[in-house]
Length: 475
Image (tube, rainbow, N blue to C red):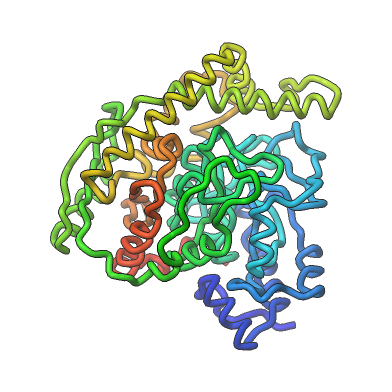
């Protein structure tokens, strides 16, 4: 079987087109992706586990005629694929086998994607870098000494290194957008309620968490959202379907947008000068294109961090208590990382009324954020306030949990706000540091307005393309 030439120059829809025209077979695409992964995995450590034979079996049984039929795909190791391990990046779940597939995974399969492994994640998806004690750190293909971001860092490394053109990711506080910024990719976090989360758990982190992908191209993200969005039985949040398919938004006239932008750190901390310059220059460029661009600090900023932490801590406690019940023993330092245990300890101080108040605060925060978009179509901010950190800077085995939390808040002050509000937000790889590391710019819009973001993203992709830029570690 021959490997597919120029595989890394195609996005996922491009690969699917080759299959549809019978220029290549799904087996050839899979063999090529496996070979590419084998070539770079020793350096980037993107994988939690491999399912090569499972993928070959899916092809042998015949694939659905979906929009991505035959395209190799990777899941984040936080997702249920029946009969396979799902460890959540933790020793506590080292022998955990999924007894069903998630609704989202079933939709991926119906779209024709060929799943051949799971990518690395930090323990329980709690870190904004991907450096779990269980499995070791994922390494950024742009500079192996630096973080891939988290918690979807393994997926980001695999896509950035051109193993595959898109991969599954989830986002409960920035876990799609932060790796996108670190690894030079496109990452869209959809609106709350847009994506299925079940069937076992129908809502993640009180609605803050959602799933989608990291991709090389804007159109892949839009087409995959078309293939997977929509409620499932029991969905607690249901939003109106889009006006038209998201893929049709790609290339559609963006119109004249009211864009608010901010380069200042919400907590008054320093933002890296190169990042300030990148966002400021983009704001000036958008103004010259005829958009209405205003420098603004949104009034809703920085008002719900404590509520968010209480919600996460309570959810971590529930997950770990359930695991303990299954194992028949308590979990301790041999099972869990120090920061995970510290977050769990916080849950001991969260009463039922505290949790209800935290969720209420989150909903009121969402109201404030939505009112901001009465005056603006889009908010543009840095995805991160610092360039991709060196590995080891955000270590979940750190004994100084306070310093860990402070650095996290300095590094990624903006992303989690839109998990709290439930609004869509995307990171785009529109700048590069002098050291050669990607810098991301984030855009957010009102709830349900992914179409606006995809129109803007496609225009920026066309005018300021990034797909031709490849990292030093590249398959």
